[in-house]
Image (cartoon, rainbow, N blue to C red):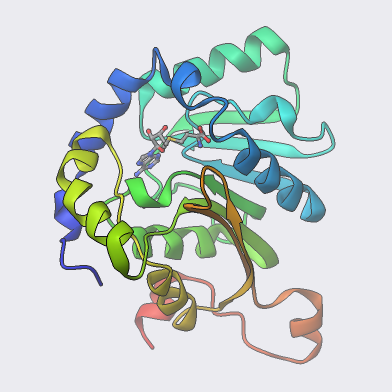
Length: 237
Ligand SMILES: C[S@@+](CC[C@H](N)C(=O)[O-])C[C@H]1O[C@@H](n2cnc3c(N)ncnc32)[C@H](O)[C@@H]1O
């Protein structure tokens, strides 16, 4: 856990920040995050089926998914999501099942609804990343994958010092600069998921593609292993 508390990045700050970003988001963050988005889409398509994109934003990634997938998207920001809805309508993206204003930490989908949960550049913007990841695991089918592209903070050195120095300003813009990989590893260690891949992503390798697989699915069912998927089951451990 970092010394900065969860509460410092609250939902009101985030919704305000992304209401401001919405008109210019594509211009500022379209190209710079493109490689990360394409890597996440490729990873998600390897599993295919029904895919949930959390923090879908203006929907930049939606046209790039194969038309064989069924896509659902959620975002806490109405102005960002309206851009995504316009994109879906303008481009006639029939593989998009629906887009909803929804909080990543409280998804209103039943357990085991999706084959893949994708979140690109989102985990460092939510107030409670671990609770949000719990929610991703809950709505994921056994054998499915969580595919993240996310900023990973430096563990030491000048970059770490700069990230911590810039942290208060970054929060006002709507994200964290410091977020260690150790937090992901610790989270996975206490849930029914395991790390499949971590790969550095541009710009400057400060971001990573991170994939987690949820235990279960056919191979686990055959072995008679339990399917502990709900948040309640994990909390009771
Ligand atoms: C940096 S943008 C990334 C947008 C998009 N995924 C992309 O690749 O460009 C972060 C997005 O996460 C959304 N977000 C932040 N906190 C959220 C939450 N608690 N629940 C749902 N979406 C959230 C923001 O509104 C914003 O659209």
